[in-house]
Figure 1 (cartoon, helix red, strand yellow):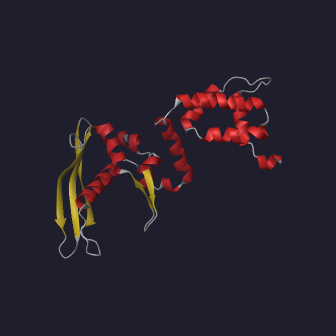
Figure 2 (cartoon, one colour):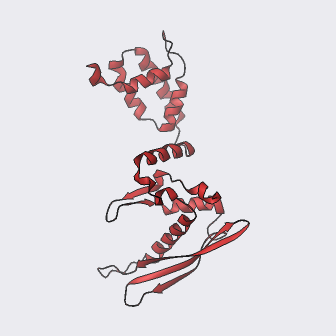
Figure 3 (cartoon, rainbow, N blue to C red):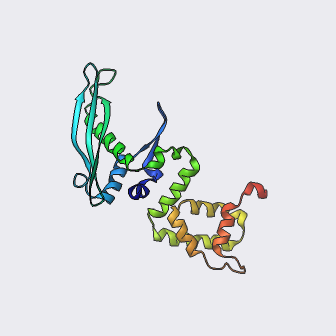
Length: 222
């Protein structure tokens, strides 16, 4: 399970929903290849598809493709045969010039899935929005968003000024607009910068900010 446990969870930003035909979650193949490269090294050196063979099925426009998938394991190399098929001529009679590239990519994705890559997608966990949100939060912490410290410092000062006005009904919209312009990681930095006490108050600026963001003018009657 050593490999499986390292690669079984999926960053939602590396997926997309396919809504036509059979609905499913598609995985970014090159994100998979990048992850495999992190674990195994460059493609074609210690891992990848080898001995690829194309068999054109007589009487059809289908081609069967097989390959030997290898990867490093237990100080040696493990391998297994993987196969897939594809139409190289559409129902309308148009030849698909990219069929070989498409089926090879499909073979790599299938092979990596046997090792546990993106297992949560194949297990249907991405049908649960709560699970997807958990993964989004987890990967946002692992892969930081762009951090513009000039913007962070400017936002921190601006939010303090608005909170000091101490009229939540009038400053609520300004606070919300400033907050929404920040990335998640920039928001965390701003919250760090707000952890000092507000004037004439025992609360932190960061606590007061939460009150502003939770404020609903329609409830207050303003």
